[in-house]
Length: 87
Length: 181
Image (cartoon, rainbow over all chains, first blue to last red; front, side):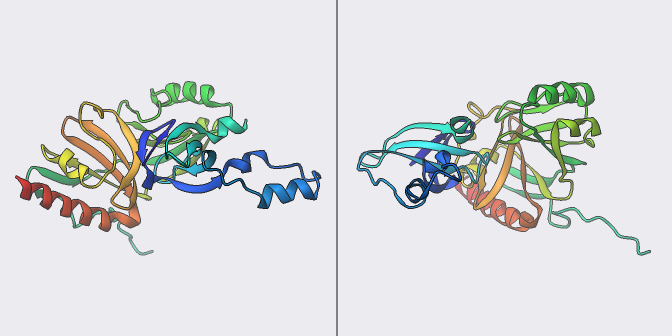
């Protein structure tokens, strides 16, 4: 499996660290209420299909990436710098 | 006061020649990591040009000037070697002295690509990784910075604490590449 880092180009999967669903980029406001925080901290989709994850290019450029991939076909559909997605 | 003698990371262990590859220790002089503050990239590039005659390197590129080299070192980060960074840069970027933090070796020879092909999971052939190209990846299990210096030469940087492991891994790969003939 290879992931195309927007900065480094296509790289082997072993250079990356997997964080999890890309919800960390949509952190609720501190006063958003229990339901919003409950969903943010605990509730995750587990799709057989397209999902968005955070990956860290630990052995490469040190960038956090948002990787859009298909859990059924293992196809990687898009990679973006998390800094650009979040800003 | 005791007189302390500086010891280089690979002192007493290099040079090493096996087959068509040679490893020598590189003395890069002062090393400073430069990480621009948000929104100051353009100012930093201008200041670098004024102070050191170099711009800001594109990802996976290194720049060389008079006695200095600026190596892209990660997202929004570069490593200046060969000169002490101009203090004027401090307004635009976080500077950190890395002079004794890295082991630097040069791998030279016809077999250099074959040696690195056993250690680095990236295509480093001349056609796609030309002189001046650089990258951050792993060498064996070590985080490393690799820069192609010329047609058969690479500059390899790893954390100084891993110098022994670097030389062991290089030696093993050089022996294997030489055995293939």
